[in-house]
Image (cartoon, helix red, strand yellow):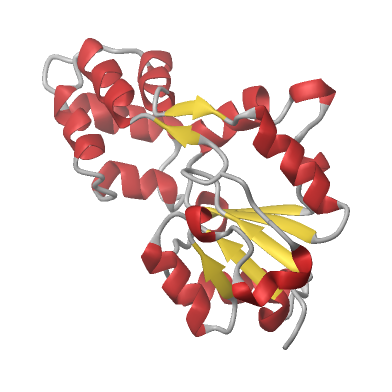
Length: 211
């Protein structure tokens, strides 16, 4: 049995908490109720998909929101603020745990995300105690920069190749069963955050993640 040496973390639902109701209400307040339906139904298509896979700019996304919502005159800042209402922050105990884990494991982040959410995280969520994202992770792999999305197995292969991680020595923590299954097909040990309390494969490592 190989010993885990590396951990790949998801972002939304693992590190940062999400509040869909708050986000929906924020879009409705700016007159973008039609777009709020995408959030309510967890739909990742059209304008949201294009932003997340890097096929649309932030300005292009905001213009697409206005086109999709007749009568909506919200500014780009209003739209970005409504979309950021989905994120509620990263609890300090998770940041503390990342710092602890970094002393024993190589850590990277792999997220299906977009420049609006990521900029919010970089500016506001990873800055506790004067730190930055680079103080927690060797590297961040972001879908909008990679032009790929989980659960495409190719995105996991790219992370393994770029980081030099061996699949059998790597743990992946993600809140999506489909993403975990894709990683598992490549030989990566994958688990949902609620299942990452001393998994059988990790007895010697103790409790790895406390959501």
